[in-house]
Length: 207
Image (cartoon, rainbow, N blue to C red; front, top):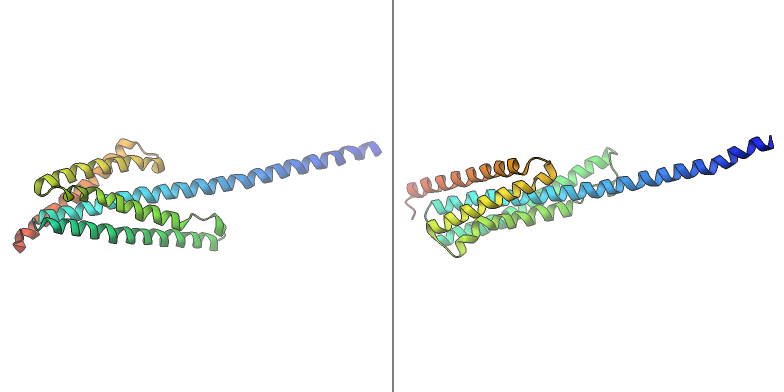
């Protein structure tokens, strides 16, 4: 009986060590997963921010340019669009991420500290919105008329394609497909803005 008692006593520490190792392994994996989730969400917020900045300000600037009013009005409108848009996008992203995290924590799906960082997501979204919104506006600081419009279109289209391609880091879609899709959407917004601006400018006798 003395010899029979030996193996269980020897096996117990080994079994405890295995369980402890598994616990440590399980404890490490969620932390790594949380960091990956936070990083992916920050990339998503940033990419969507720069996309929204280009698309919305491109449409706004083309609308004002199409009205053929004082060139300074294009710059004023573009800067106002960047400032208001970046604040709005950053605040919206913060509220969205914070609310989602609180709902998950309330449902015990995740712990409070495991949630995605809303401050980082808001900064990425609002900050890159400002950068994206600056792309279609930049040419109007050193050119006017059709020259500024053409340069703005070329720069915006190129930036939209690149932003769409970068988005595939999150969506895993083909870069060409994603880039072309955003190019079409953003280009359509710019064309529509320019058309409406031209029609309104003509109707109101601007220019």
